[in-house]
Amino acid sequence: MSKLYLIMGLPGSGKTTKAEEIRLLAPDRTKHFEADMFFLSEGKYVFDPAGVPYAQWWCQRETENALRERYDVIVSNTFLTPAERRPYILLAKKYACELVVLCCSGNYGSTHGVPPETMEKMKRRFVPFDREKEGF
Image (cartoon, rainbow, N blue to C red; front, side):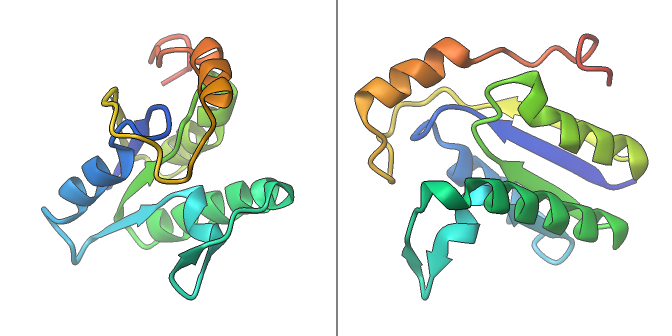
């Protein structure tokens, strides 16, 4: 049975680091995706707010493709609300995956320079994962 890991937390909380730690346990059968990867151009991060919906779609598509091929998949994202997690929960059900949800809470500083006022807004929006309420 494949596993789908959702790693959630605010920017700079250690999501990507945790994802890489997990991926390295079985690198030949594990894929890691995050919407930020969509904004990489020749190894450089080039964020465009208008591209966020496309980045989310890309991340979901890549996740589904990998699950279809029976890889374990790690998705690291802020996942602040149940609505943001829902497409992945549906994929876990569709492909009969084990769902593992991890929340990172470190404070390592945002590598993408998220302003403090945006971080505060994100903290206020955060809803902890509740397996029962989210239907898994």
